[in-house]
Length: 256
Image (cartoon, rainbow, N blue to C red; front, side, top):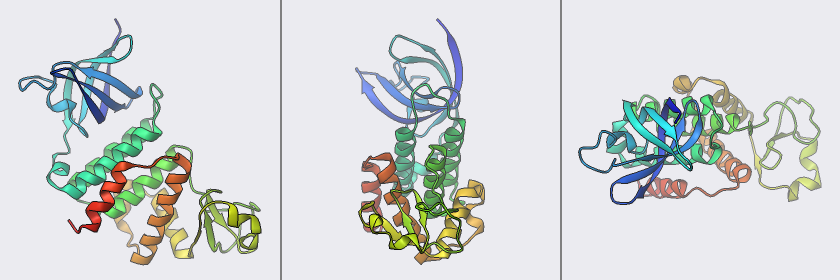
C-alpha cells in the first residue's frame, strides 16, 4: 500500500453510508481525485472539518482500487468567512464548480490549485471586490485550461491591428474592422461589440497577479461588457451550464 501526502481543497462531496463521504478534492500534486473520508460525519471524527467544501488541508492518503482513502488531515485554511455571507458562498461554489469542470483526475495542475486557493482566500478576506475577483478568476482559469482569449491578433485574418471592434466567442478573440464585414461571422456563434477600453481591461485581468486585481478601477460599462463576454466564452468552450452560476444570478437579482 503506497502512502502519499498532498495539499488539497474540497470541491464537493457525496454522503456514503451512515458516516462516510466521498470527497472530490483538487490536489496540488495529483490533480483532481476522489477520496473516501471514513467516519467523517461522526461528531468526534478527526476528519470532520477537513471533509467540508472549500476547506484547504494537507492530506495523508493511500490509493485503493477505485478511490483514494484519507487516513489523516491537517487543516491549513477553512475560509470560514465565506460561509457567513450567502453571496460569497455563492461565488465560492461557482469557483469550485468551474475548477471541477476543467480539472482532470490524476493529472496535476499546480497553477489551477494555487489559483483556486488564492481566489478563496481573497473572497474570504474581502480584500478584493467579489465581482472583480470573479472576472479575474474566470479569465485566469480559462487561460490555464488552454482557452486564453486572443486579444492581440484578428481571429479571422490573424493580423495585428490598431483597433478591434468585435469579439468572437467561437473564434476565441478579437476581430478587426476589415474582417468584421465577413458574412461568415454572422453564423459563427456569439459576436460582441468591444471597445478599446474593454480590451485593455481584459489584458489587465489576464496578466495581473490575482492579489493586485484591485489596483485598477474598471468602469461599470466596461465591467458589464466583460462579464457578458466571459459568460458566453466559458459556456461555448466548456460546453457546460453551471447550476451554481444560475443560483449566483438569482442571489444578485434578489439584492441579497
